Image: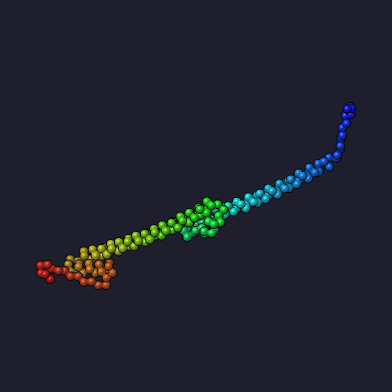
Length: 173
């Protein structure tokens, strides 16, 4: 067991020692950059894929809000290919809501047309009554009053002709 205290020292130039470290650092940095760019590209593609049906739904809802109730989301454009089931469900609900709105507006239009026709008819009846009242007021002769009343009623009812007479109960004529 001797007292030999040997030590080995190896001298290596610094460039030879740090070159592999630098190469590994550059390789790691390049691979990390490629992975980061790939992740960004994949993230953008996924975001676009997920956002496209939502944007289509948004554009259609804006068109309907402007009064274009003929707009619908095509079944194939969202329902079957939508990446998110909730968006497809929302599209179906949206189409049902639009269809109901369209039917409601059609019903309202029909009702407004009917009420307009009734109002027009009321105005025509009122005009007929005014003409009749004016004619009756201008004459005191019963036969003439009756004849004018019958004429005005024939015009109002759209009848080509009619005949009326006064029956005298006392004379039975």
